[in-house]
Amino acid sequence: MTFQQQHSDASKFPMMKIYDWYNGPYPARVRIALAEKGLLSRIEFVPVNLWTGEHKKPAFLAINYSGTLPVLELADGTLIAECTAITQYLDALDDSPVLTGKTPTEKGIIHMMTKRAEIEFLDAVSTYFHHATPGLGPDIELSQNPEWGERMRDKAVRGMHYFNSVLKNQPFVAGNAFSMADIAVLGGMIFASLVNLPVPDECEALHAWHARMNERSSVQDWRAMVKQGEPKN
Image (cartoon, rainbow, N blue to C red; front, top):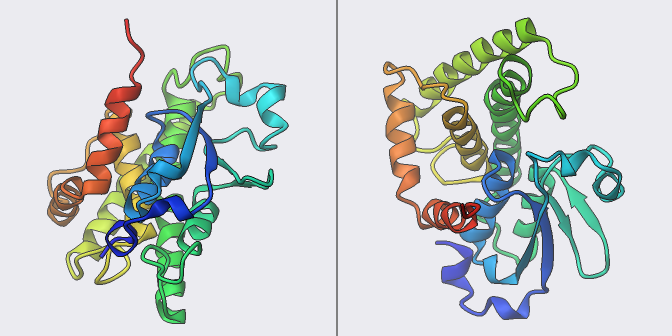
């Protein structure tokens, strides 16, 4: 049961601001989490254009030192960066966490699998994108190491095989329930699609899981937001 099903009145929760880019793989993680929690109506999205390098300019670096997206800004001005940290905050807004676990064991396993999804898959695809492809363009990709990028591409594919092996034995990345770890792997799948890095055909369990995830209303909400956010010609 999602937050939205449990709490039909999201208006009692504070308005928040999120700096992101409409189709970014990392922003996708937080947008999907917001949809799962039924909190999209409480968010003002502030676009930070990745393709023009806006996230690396002084105005945004004053908001987030690392120059990465997304960033959550609370009503009192508090800033929270990093997808995992933002998701943990959102899940703690009520007493019914659905993404980060309820028991100590659930919390530990979800955190572990989320970290593995980042290191073994999502971040590896990101490194491949920034180093072994044109990335965000010559004005932004000032120092590239193509050999390192190719190594990270291979690591990402190994990560796909790892998660395929996990999903052969359980319905979700961290066990028997959808969690923040599934969202992190979804981020990897989104990024892999953007850079035309296919999931091997033999990763049948990963493909089947991905098909099921695409049926979730939160993922469909994210896809609708991407379509709505596409720049008009």
